[in-house]
Amino acid sequence: MTRLLLIGPPGAGKGTQAARLAENYSIPAISTGDIFRFNVKNETELGSKAKAYMDAGDNVPDSLTNALIRDRLAESDCDAGFLLDGYPRTTDQVRELDEFLAGHGTALDVVVELVADPDVVVERLRKRASEQGRSDDGESVVRHRLEVYRDQTEPLIDVYDGRGVLVKVDAIGEIDVVTERITAALAVRGIELAGHASH
Ligand code: ADP
Image (cartoon, rainbow, N blue to C red; front, side, top):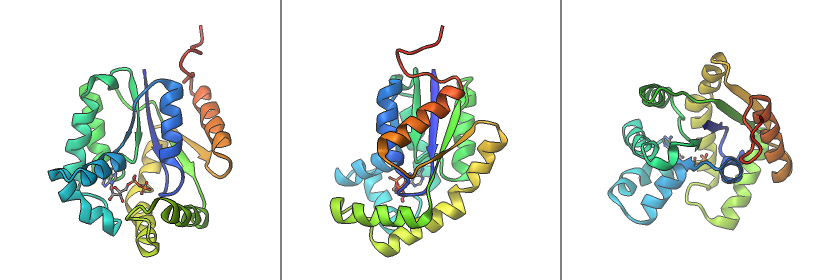
């Protein structure tokens, strides 16, 4: 049973690492950003409510996000654990998640902070904008997303550090190298790769 959270600024590589970790640890990766983008693309009611916030680089209101994640975590594939990417990103969302997990007698095992210099993440996002055309990767929106991260999400790092569940991992380097750093940091915390459980 492994409950993980990946936290870090936009462009730190959370989505990329989340997909690899999910596979390696046999747990679902849950990205609120991906769920919102899916809903926008499919023009659902949730998507129509979230779109303007996303395009502006603002957080979608907590009420929408909390409801969405509560439903997702209640699905049976999360029974074996999960990896959260992009949630929680406000103190209100931390409170919600704490309550939800406590209601199930659990808590997050490890919070991995992907540490990346702002200049590097801006450059990565610029590259992604030209390759993928994500609607929130324009230069001024990127700058705003970084501000929103600094104001609303970065404070959560101290909260999790205070609980003794935080590990910091350098997110600058080859994708494989970063995955190895995370894997090593998790092993120190007693979280082993699927199929490599210690005896
Ligand atoms: P990034 O980490 O690169 O900023 P995400 O895919 O995590 O990208 O998020 C994209 C957008 O989706 C955010 O700017 C925000 O509008 C919305 N979003 C994602 N997760 C949340 C969340 N937990 N709370 C509020 N809004 C969210």
